[in-house]
Length: 89
Image (cartoon, rainbow, N blue to C red; front, side, top):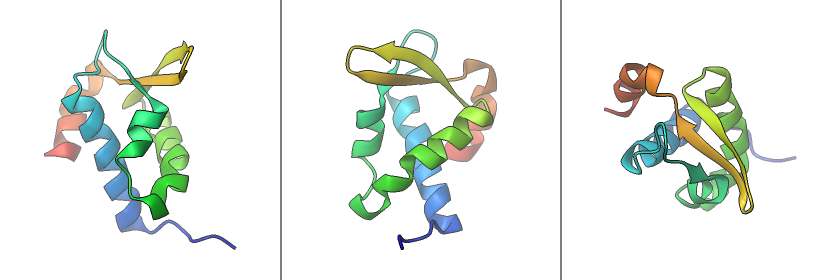
């Protein structure tokens, strides 16, 4: 049986993903691949990135940019920028 995701780890991953997309300015034209988002997460939490990312998609904070030849790409929802900045800062 695998490790369960704690609330603090969940928020740490969520904040990390949003911060990474924000710093790369992945808004309307920019995007970032899933592998790049996962690379900044500690090894023992990498398995939970998909779970947190799917929740961010449901909250519409992160949007699916589309499929590229290298995999799925994501970007921030510019309409919810104020909410994203509250989480990050």
